[in-house]
Length: 133
Image (cartoon, rainbow, N blue to C red; front, side):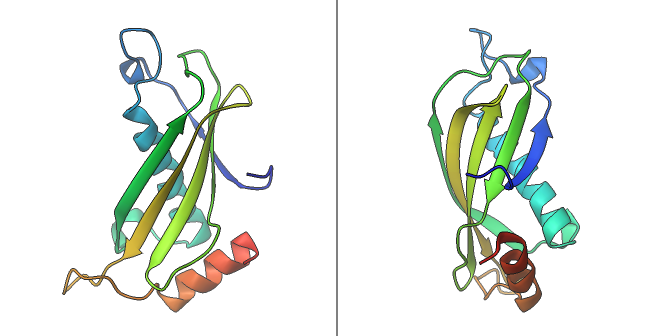
């Protein structure tokens, strides 16, 4: 991931912690979601309630614990585009050090049929332009 990746600052909340004082592993998926929502809203200029896509897969690799006093940033990039899928790569950084990495795949969905559909041309162009694809 590069320094010019899309980034979002995340506040670590007390409720995010497990009994060891670390951010619970399940919370990382929520951090990815915060970054993904911000990406769609900023890059696609589409409000969340108008984004017709679903999360098809999620993978997280943990490298170090995140604690309540850490300054957390989530970096996100789209490495490529499929016909209906938008793969996304993430880095959760705590005080500038990579704490976790991950990947998700969003799939564009036809609201009526609930089946996959091609990524809208406008989305494809905006993502390509932003990512330099």
